[in-house]
Each structure stands twice: as structure tokens, then as C-alpha cells.
Image 1 (cartoon, rainbow, N blue to C red):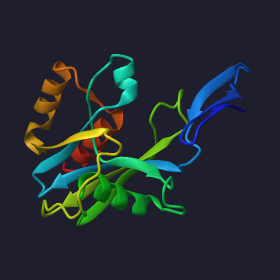
Image 2 (image 1 turned 180 degrees about the vertical axis):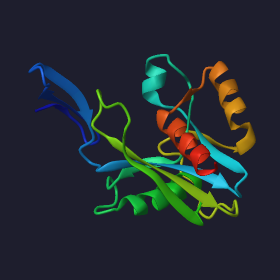
Image 3 (image 1 turned 135 degrees about the vertical axis):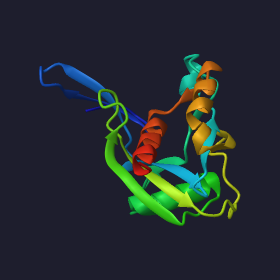
Length: 182
């Protein structure tokens, strides 16, 4: 049953196994979420520095680090996951991948709270050339930061000490990149 309904988010309830009401969030306008880890010249990783209103509203963090990401089918009807990966990489980073590898599908972001799933992809880009001016996604994306792959974990720890949040999907993408390179 829908308890609250907006264009991008619904609050719904369903009975749990015990019969008690389980309340969760659902995206009515998308069939999946894509997260794309851009690897540039096999040397650097492109992060997005974002201002996420829920994290700011709760006083958790002013900034959050993530990768290009977006909803599948929210703006382009009938869009495939592969098409969404290419579109989001172009929109949020201005880049075109030379190779895209889907690492996992149906990754639950917070299975007890949200029904959405995530497809994680790695985009290999041989030449860091901005093809199209990246969007700010309504002011959410405030910066794009290139970090040497060998320095990523040290840099992320520094960011954490400075109070910056990191998305779980980004950590998953980094895990898959690490596994890919073994």
C-alpha cells in the first residue's frame, strides 16, 4: 500500500513475515540505478563531490563522494541499463567510455529500507577529454576530482577524517575494480 506518493519517491508498507507492517521507500519512476566508476588511462579515478540534502539535513556531512550515477528509465522511456550507464557518464562527467564492464546487478542499497537495486559498472576511458559540459544535477555535484588509483584509499581516509561521507555504492565499485585488477 502507498502511504505517501511523490514523482520520485513513494513511502509504502507491506506485511513482513511476522505479519507486522514493514514501511519502506520505493522509486516509482525507475527500474534500477546505475553507478559508474570512471577509470582514466588506467591510472586515475574520477570522483564526484556532491552536496546531498538528506545528509546535510541530518547534520551527517556537508559533502559526499560518489561516482556518476542515475536512475534507469526516469527520463528516457524504455532505457536499458547499458544506455543509462552511457548517458549518466556523459551527463555527469562529460565522458565517453572506451569500454564498459558491468560488475554486478541487483545490488541492494539498503534492503531493509529501500526497494531500489543498483547496477555497478566500471567505465574505462583511454583519453580524459571532456566531450560535453557536465551537468551539476540540480546543484548536487559541486566538483569532479581525479585521484591516482594508488592513492585512493589514503585519500578517502583523509576525506573521512575531514567529515566527508562516501556512498556505499562507491565502496562496492572500488571493491570490484580491485578484484578486476588482481
